[in-house]
Image (cartoon, rainbow, N blue to C red; front, top):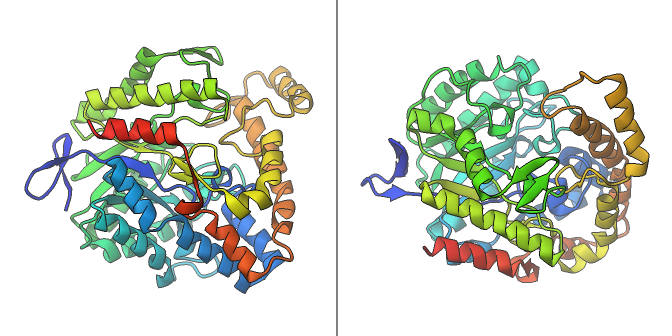
Length: 455
């Protein structure tokens, strides 16, 4: 079983291990840009159930979980040379909001299956609770239908998260292919006063259930602020996320300026040094839980995005940094592979509409429908020049409220209606579009990663 020894992860015989791999985004925690739906996962599932009914919706979603990751996927990652997969999960797989504290053991079925497949290929798993009760951050990826991270405002939600982690830790306590637990993805505690005491409590609870597995703890404000840690925990990795601004949908050119900020390899290295300062000062392992550019389909732009990734990997290699690239599989924005076939035939036009409206936060250029939204941004800037909402200011907040919540939620019925009239075989075919054998491989990205991992 892996454990922390100084600034490294090691096996029981003290062999150093640098975890390098991908995140399995969009699987047990679905995200809008990854599988093509609008808004947040729970709202989407509710809309689809309204069209298909409970049983047939369950048929589709369970088949999607089965097809999204199989033995073939594990074999591909092993072939590339990866030794780790960070697995984001949503608490809804184990607990219903109307039945809090009641753990549903069915939630373990798919997670056990994939951890087993990965282990059979010599690949470790990091279990990442990406969506907590009440939502631990302000955005869609914590299954948040609003912009309020209510998790930090209500002890009830925190109690449920601790209870769930006690069950998860007890279940996996003897599984040596689980590298460890990432209990809170990208927390967004506005006050910064709740998260420290909560981590103290959560760490003690997990350690009681499972004293051996590594804890991978994200800093506050989306894994960037580590001042909230009041004590150093044993056998712990403090996780930073390291997205490059030039690699965003609105980023570039590279090297060049993105929204007035210069970005080249030297700046990437400076930014990473700042983001990882806490780990260096405390002598703890360096591990980047998420990073990676998005791709546009424009060969010139995408060549620059690949260069960003190449430069980041060279920086990490030079400093013995472990990493988990975001993300493995999707419908075309960022994945190593992306779905095709019946799902894209059915939903391709809808996905294009989402892109035209900029309805997904991840993938938006922030310029879509600018003729409509530019006057609103100007109004906010003129009337409220001092407004600087958490976490990233007025422009991002306005886009989140209008584009990524209001417009995204208005799109939900349209997405759900595309399921109407489909037979069981057609639903299965949609889900099976995510089978690796039906996916398109982003070959330049795969080649880049294979080359890096072979060194």
